[in-house]
Image (cartoon, rainbow, N blue to C red; front, top):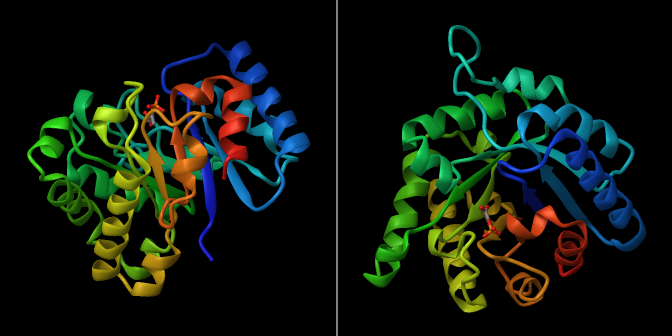
Length: 253
Ligand code: PEP
């Protein structure tokens, strides 16, 4: 059975105090309102990982994620944060290959592969993001584009390493734009992703991989998106910054 996951990517938002108040609201709402088997993941900025993690420790449903990781183990890499450091403060998931990091920080497929390796080697799970820009969809090349992203960063992993991977499909034209993929567009891409994964790894592992949808997912559209056969949850940006909205998205699963 594949895991249902709803992950909140806080990006470059919140101060220390705001982060703690947001996570404690989410933690309480999840305890009071969320039943069933869903993993709720929060990805605060690096400085708040430890305090946010401490607050959610007693709640089995809540898990901690980092928004990025260095591909290097240690050394002279000013400003970087290693997988060992993240693991040591209780991080369980790491978002890797978000389109904002690919675009603004020029992260290429090989670097992403190395980040995945480092994450898995330290006992954490990568949430590998993929998704096409608008011009690729308009040119009807979206499947090819996403297939290449998967192949270029994932295909060198072993079957055992791949077992740890969560995939997030995030069409770039839907991120932070208020324009979401239709449930049909999401389902057909998720099905395609699962098929590509089954070619690279064994079919059972591909079947068991959680594939999340991301891109302007909110309480109004989450139920319809999450009802699709190959949509196993969501990676949520804007709506994860408000405890009420995020909890309502979680409850849509
Ligand atoms: C994201 O950036 O991962 C994301 C899905 O953002 P939003 O929900 O704001 O579109």
